[in-house]
Image: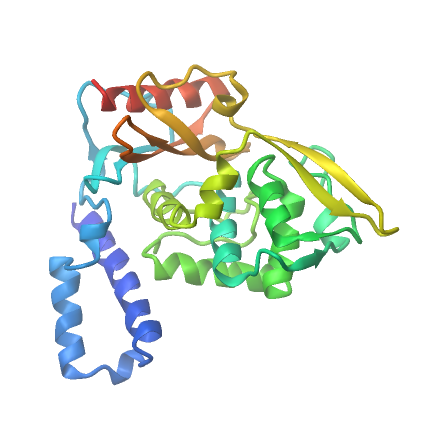
Length: 321
Protein backbone atom coordinates (compact mmCIF):
# COMPACT_ATOMS: atom_id res chain seq x y z
CA UNK A 1 0.00 0.00 0.00
CA UNK A 2 2.85 2.41 0.82
CA UNK A 3 4.34 1.86 -2.64
CA UNK A 4 1.03 2.70 -4.29
CA UNK A 5 0.54 5.78 -2.09
CA UNK A 6 4.00 6.91 -3.18
CA UNK A 7 3.02 6.26 -6.79
CA UNK A 8 -0.10 8.43 -6.46
CA UNK A 9 2.01 11.23 -4.99
CA UNK A 10 4.45 10.88 -7.89
CA UNK A 11 1.55 11.21 -10.34
CA UNK A 12 0.35 14.39 -8.67
CA UNK A 13 3.89 15.72 -8.33
CA UNK A 14 4.49 15.17 -12.04
CA UNK A 15 1.37 17.11 -12.99
CA UNK A 16 2.00 19.90 -10.55
CA UNK A 17 5.70 20.22 -11.29
CA UNK A 18 5.01 20.68 -14.99
CA UNK A 19 2.24 23.13 -14.09
CA UNK A 20 4.70 25.28 -12.18
CA UNK A 21 7.54 24.90 -14.67
CA UNK A 22 5.45 25.53 -17.77
CA UNK A 23 2.36 27.39 -16.64
CA UNK A 24 4.12 29.72 -14.21
CA UNK A 25 7.36 30.07 -16.12
CA UNK A 26 9.57 29.42 -13.08
CA UNK A 27 12.14 26.76 -12.32
CA UNK A 28 11.76 24.32 -9.46
CA UNK A 29 14.69 25.87 -7.57
CA UNK A 30 13.19 29.36 -7.83
CA UNK A 31 9.72 28.66 -6.51
CA UNK A 32 8.64 31.15 -3.89
CA UNK A 33 7.92 30.02 -0.34
CA UNK A 34 4.23 30.56 -1.02
CA UNK A 35 4.36 28.44 -4.17
CA UNK A 36 6.21 25.68 -2.33
CA UNK A 37 3.62 25.63 0.45
CA UNK A 38 0.74 25.60 -2.02
CA UNK A 39 2.48 22.83 -3.94
CA UNK A 40 2.81 20.65 -0.84
CA UNK A 41 -0.80 21.26 0.15
CA UNK A 42 -2.02 20.35 -3.30
CA UNK A 43 0.05 17.16 -3.48
CA UNK A 44 -1.26 15.81 -0.21
CA UNK A 45 -4.81 17.13 -0.41
CA UNK A 46 -5.03 16.71 -4.20
CA UNK A 47 -6.91 20.01 -4.54
CA UNK A 48 -7.72 20.80 -8.16
CA UNK A 49 -5.78 17.87 -9.59
CA UNK A 50 -6.96 14.52 -8.27
CA UNK A 51 -10.53 15.78 -8.13
CA UNK A 52 -10.44 15.80 -11.93
CA UNK A 53 -9.05 12.27 -12.16
CA UNK A 54 -9.98 8.76 -11.12
CA UNK A 55 -7.53 8.10 -8.30
CA UNK A 56 -7.09 5.14 -5.98
CA UNK A 57 -4.33 3.97 -3.65
CA UNK A 58 -5.41 0.35 -4.05
CA UNK A 59 -3.65 -2.09 -6.32
CA UNK A 60 -6.91 -3.95 -6.84
CA UNK A 61 -10.44 -2.52 -6.76
CA UNK A 62 -13.53 -4.72 -6.57
CA UNK A 63 -16.77 -3.80 -8.32
CA UNK A 64 -20.06 -5.63 -7.97
CA UNK A 65 -19.65 -9.23 -9.11
CA UNK A 66 -16.99 -8.54 -11.76
CA UNK A 67 -14.32 -11.23 -11.88
CA UNK A 68 -11.92 -10.93 -14.82
CA UNK A 69 -9.56 -13.72 -15.90
CA UNK A 70 -6.52 -14.12 -13.67
CA UNK A 71 -4.30 -14.65 -16.72
CA UNK A 72 -4.64 -11.00 -17.80
CA UNK A 73 -1.71 -8.67 -17.17
CA UNK A 74 -3.91 -5.79 -15.99
CA UNK A 75 -7.47 -4.49 -16.23
CA UNK A 76 -9.20 -1.28 -15.24
CA UNK A 77 -12.59 0.41 -15.39
CA UNK A 78 -12.72 4.18 -14.89
CA UNK A 79 -15.87 6.26 -14.43
CA UNK A 80 -15.07 9.68 -15.90
CA UNK A 81 -18.33 11.23 -14.68
CA UNK A 82 -18.03 10.37 -11.00
CA UNK A 83 -14.19 10.33 -11.12
CA UNK A 84 -13.88 6.83 -9.70
CA UNK A 85 -11.80 3.75 -10.36
CA UNK A 86 -14.67 1.26 -10.43
CA UNK A 87 -12.62 -1.88 -10.99
CA UNK A 88 -8.97 -2.73 -11.24
CA UNK A 89 -6.41 -5.49 -11.11
CA UNK A 90 -2.68 -4.81 -11.35
CA UNK A 91 -3.36 -1.26 -12.50
CA UNK A 92 0.09 -0.12 -11.30
CA UNK A 93 1.97 -3.14 -12.59
CA UNK A 94 4.67 -2.60 -15.22
CA UNK A 95 3.40 -3.95 -18.54
CA UNK A 96 4.22 -3.77 -22.24
CA UNK A 97 1.72 -1.65 -24.20
CA UNK A 98 2.07 -2.90 -27.80
CA UNK A 99 0.13 -0.57 -30.13
CA UNK A 100 -1.76 1.15 -27.33
CA UNK A 101 1.47 3.19 -27.43
CA UNK A 102 -0.12 5.01 -30.36
CA UNK A 103 -2.53 6.76 -28.01
CA UNK A 104 0.40 8.81 -26.72
CA UNK A 105 1.73 9.23 -30.27
CA UNK A 106 -1.63 10.75 -31.21
CA UNK A 107 -1.64 12.98 -28.13
CA UNK A 108 1.77 14.45 -28.99
CA UNK A 109 0.73 14.95 -32.63
CA UNK A 110 -2.49 16.70 -31.62
CA UNK A 111 -0.73 18.94 -29.14
CA UNK A 112 2.33 19.91 -31.17
CA UNK A 113 1.29 19.43 -34.78
CA UNK A 114 -0.86 21.27 -37.28
CA UNK A 115 -3.30 18.74 -38.70
CA UNK A 116 -3.26 20.50 -42.08
CA UNK A 117 0.54 20.19 -42.42
CA UNK A 118 1.60 18.17 -45.45
CA UNK A 119 4.03 15.40 -44.51
CA UNK A 120 6.45 13.73 -46.91
CA UNK A 121 6.95 10.09 -45.97
CA UNK A 122 10.57 8.98 -45.55
CA UNK A 123 12.04 5.61 -46.45
CA UNK A 124 12.60 4.96 -42.73
CA UNK A 125 8.87 5.20 -42.10
CA UNK A 126 8.18 2.36 -44.54
CA UNK A 127 10.89 -0.06 -43.41
CA UNK A 128 9.07 -2.71 -41.39
CA UNK A 129 8.83 -6.52 -41.45
CA UNK A 130 6.13 -7.89 -43.79
CA UNK A 131 3.91 -8.97 -40.88
CA UNK A 132 3.94 -5.53 -39.28
CA UNK A 133 0.72 -3.55 -38.96
CA UNK A 134 0.79 -0.87 -41.68
CA UNK A 135 -1.53 1.64 -43.31
CA UNK A 136 0.19 1.31 -46.69
CA UNK A 137 2.03 4.59 -47.29
CA UNK A 138 5.20 4.61 -49.39
CA UNK A 139 8.43 6.58 -49.34
CA UNK A 140 7.88 9.93 -51.07
CA UNK A 141 4.13 9.98 -50.48
CA UNK A 142 2.61 13.25 -49.35
CA UNK A 143 -0.40 13.48 -47.03
CA UNK A 144 -1.64 15.64 -44.21
CA UNK A 145 -0.91 15.02 -40.56
CA UNK A 146 -4.65 14.53 -40.11
CA UNK A 147 -4.64 11.69 -42.64
CA UNK A 148 -1.67 10.14 -40.87
CA UNK A 149 -3.62 10.11 -37.61
CA UNK A 150 -6.33 8.10 -39.35
CA UNK A 151 -3.62 5.72 -40.59
CA UNK A 152 -2.21 5.53 -37.08
CA UNK A 153 -5.39 4.89 -35.11
CA UNK A 154 -7.75 2.96 -37.40
CA UNK A 155 -5.56 0.19 -38.91
CA UNK A 156 -2.79 0.81 -36.33
CA UNK A 157 -0.18 1.74 -38.91
CA UNK A 158 3.41 1.56 -37.66
CA UNK A 159 4.43 3.39 -40.83
CA UNK A 160 2.10 6.26 -39.94
CA UNK A 161 3.57 6.34 -36.42
CA UNK A 162 7.12 6.85 -37.69
CA UNK A 163 6.01 9.42 -40.29
CA UNK A 164 4.29 11.39 -37.51
CA UNK A 165 7.33 11.13 -35.24
CA UNK A 166 9.72 12.36 -37.91
CA UNK A 167 7.42 15.22 -38.85
CA UNK A 168 6.94 16.44 -35.28
CA UNK A 169 10.44 15.90 -33.88
CA UNK A 170 12.77 15.09 -36.78
CA UNK A 171 13.49 11.57 -35.59
CA UNK A 172 11.98 8.68 -33.68
CA UNK A 173 14.50 9.18 -30.88
CA UNK A 174 13.61 12.83 -30.36
CA UNK A 175 9.91 12.07 -30.60
CA UNK A 176 10.23 9.38 -27.91
CA UNK A 177 11.79 11.98 -25.61
CA UNK A 178 8.82 14.25 -26.22
CA UNK A 179 6.42 11.36 -25.58
CA UNK A 180 8.05 10.68 -22.23
CA UNK A 181 7.93 14.36 -21.30
CA UNK A 182 4.22 14.52 -22.09
CA UNK A 183 3.56 11.33 -20.16
CA UNK A 184 5.34 12.72 -17.12
CA UNK A 185 3.56 16.06 -17.42
CA UNK A 186 0.14 14.41 -17.16
CA UNK A 187 1.19 12.18 -14.26
CA UNK A 188 2.01 8.98 -16.17
CA UNK A 189 5.23 8.66 -14.19
CA UNK A 190 5.65 4.91 -14.69
CA UNK A 191 5.70 5.11 -18.48
CA UNK A 192 8.84 5.01 -20.63
CA UNK A 193 8.57 4.72 -24.41
CA UNK A 194 11.36 4.38 -26.95
CA UNK A 195 9.28 4.40 -30.14
CA UNK A 196 5.93 5.74 -31.42
CA UNK A 197 4.40 2.41 -32.47
CA UNK A 198 4.85 -0.08 -29.64
CA UNK A 199 6.91 -2.81 -31.26
CA UNK A 200 8.54 -4.62 -28.39
CA UNK A 201 11.52 -3.24 -26.51
CA UNK A 202 12.35 -4.15 -22.91
CA UNK A 203 12.69 -0.43 -22.14
CA UNK A 204 9.26 0.37 -23.58
CA UNK A 205 6.66 -0.01 -20.84
CA UNK A 206 3.74 1.55 -19.00
CA UNK A 207 0.94 0.65 -16.55
CA UNK A 208 -2.80 0.33 -17.01
CA UNK A 209 -3.31 3.40 -14.83
CA UNK A 210 -0.86 5.41 -16.93
CA UNK A 211 -2.73 4.35 -20.07
CA UNK A 212 -5.92 5.67 -18.50
CA UNK A 213 -4.20 9.00 -17.83
CA UNK A 214 -2.89 9.22 -21.40
CA UNK A 215 -6.18 8.16 -22.99
CA UNK A 216 -8.11 10.54 -20.75
CA UNK A 217 -5.94 13.38 -22.04
CA UNK A 218 -6.45 12.31 -25.65
CA UNK A 219 -10.23 12.33 -25.48
CA UNK A 220 -10.14 16.03 -24.65
CA UNK A 221 -9.52 16.44 -28.41
CA UNK A 222 -12.66 16.14 -30.55
CA UNK A 223 -10.51 15.08 -33.51
CA UNK A 224 -9.22 12.08 -31.57
CA UNK A 225 -12.73 10.90 -30.65
CA UNK A 226 -13.86 11.41 -34.23
CA UNK A 227 -11.04 9.26 -35.59
CA UNK A 228 -11.27 6.36 -33.12
CA UNK A 229 -15.03 6.17 -33.62
CA UNK A 230 -14.57 5.38 -37.33
CA UNK A 231 -14.65 1.77 -38.48
CA UNK A 232 -13.60 2.51 -42.06
CA UNK A 233 -11.91 5.44 -43.77
CA UNK A 234 -10.51 6.25 -47.22
CA UNK A 235 -7.13 7.91 -46.70
CA UNK A 236 -6.05 10.31 -49.43
CA UNK A 237 -2.36 10.16 -50.46
CA UNK A 238 -0.42 12.00 -53.16
CA UNK A 239 2.12 9.69 -54.82
CA UNK A 240 5.57 10.78 -56.00
CA UNK A 241 4.27 11.20 -59.56
CA UNK A 242 1.61 13.63 -58.35
CA UNK A 243 -1.35 11.31 -58.71
CA UNK A 244 -3.77 10.95 -55.82
CA UNK A 245 -4.63 7.48 -54.60
CA UNK A 246 -6.94 6.24 -51.89
CA UNK A 247 -5.91 3.78 -49.20
CA UNK A 248 -8.92 2.02 -47.63
CA UNK A 249 -8.49 1.70 -43.87
CA UNK A 250 -10.37 -0.65 -41.56
CA UNK A 251 -10.49 -0.69 -37.78
CA UNK A 252 -8.68 -3.37 -35.78
CA UNK A 253 -11.45 -3.38 -33.16
CA UNK A 254 -13.76 -6.39 -33.22
CA UNK A 255 -16.48 -4.16 -31.77
CA UNK A 256 -16.15 -1.88 -34.78
CA UNK A 257 -16.10 -4.79 -37.20
CA UNK A 258 -19.20 -6.32 -35.65
CA UNK A 259 -17.25 -9.48 -34.78
CA UNK A 260 -17.57 -9.21 -31.00
CA UNK A 261 -20.69 -8.99 -28.88
CA UNK A 262 -21.07 -5.43 -27.62
CA UNK A 263 -21.88 -4.38 -24.04
CA UNK A 264 -25.58 -4.60 -23.24
CA UNK A 265 -26.43 -1.05 -22.17
CA UNK A 266 -23.39 1.01 -23.12
CA UNK A 267 -22.41 2.46 -26.47
CA UNK A 268 -18.86 1.74 -27.58
CA UNK A 269 -17.37 4.94 -28.98
CA UNK A 270 -13.93 3.66 -29.93
CA UNK A 271 -10.44 3.03 -28.70
CA UNK A 272 -7.11 1.43 -29.50
CA UNK A 273 -6.03 -2.18 -29.79
CA UNK A 274 -2.57 -3.64 -29.35
CA UNK A 275 -0.86 -6.96 -29.97
CA UNK A 276 2.71 -8.25 -29.68
CA UNK A 277 4.09 -11.56 -28.49
CA UNK A 278 5.24 -10.02 -25.23
CA UNK A 279 2.30 -7.72 -24.56
CA UNK A 280 -0.31 -10.16 -25.96
CA UNK A 281 -3.75 -8.76 -26.82
CA UNK A 282 -4.69 -5.35 -25.45
CA UNK A 283 -7.54 -2.86 -25.73
CA UNK A 284 -8.19 0.62 -24.36
CA UNK A 285 -11.80 1.67 -24.89
CA UNK A 286 -14.13 4.65 -24.50
CA UNK A 287 -17.85 3.99 -23.92
CA UNK A 288 -20.88 5.92 -22.74
CA UNK A 289 -24.16 5.07 -21.03
CA UNK A 290 -27.65 6.33 -21.89
CA UNK A 291 -27.09 9.49 -19.83
CA UNK A 292 -23.90 10.24 -21.76
CA UNK A 293 -21.56 9.40 -18.89
CA UNK A 294 -18.18 8.27 -20.17
CA UNK A 295 -16.16 5.22 -19.14
CA UNK A 296 -12.61 4.18 -19.97
CA UNK A 297 -11.96 0.45 -19.80
CA UNK A 298 -8.66 -1.33 -20.25
CA UNK A 299 -7.74 -4.97 -20.83
CA UNK A 300 -4.05 -5.83 -21.16
CA UNK A 301 -2.29 -9.12 -21.76
CA UNK A 302 -5.06 -11.40 -23.02
CA UNK A 303 -3.97 -14.61 -24.71
CA UNK A 304 -6.63 -14.33 -27.43
CA UNK A 305 -8.87 -11.72 -29.03
CA UNK A 306 -11.97 -13.38 -27.63
CA UNK A 307 -10.62 -13.04 -24.09
CA UNK A 308 -10.11 -9.31 -24.61
CA UNK A 309 -13.77 -8.70 -25.48
CA UNK A 310 -15.12 -11.26 -23.02
CA UNK A 311 -13.39 -9.47 -20.13
CA UNK A 312 -14.19 -6.03 -21.47
CA UNK A 313 -17.88 -6.96 -21.48
CA UNK A 314 -17.65 -8.34 -17.95
CA UNK A 315 -16.68 -4.88 -16.74
CA UNK A 316 -18.93 -2.79 -18.96
CA UNK A 317 -22.05 -4.89 -18.46
CA UNK A 318 -21.66 -4.46 -14.70
CA UNK A 319 -21.97 -0.68 -15.06
CA UNK A 320 -25.67 -0.88 -15.85
CA UNK A 321 -26.58 -3.72 -13.48
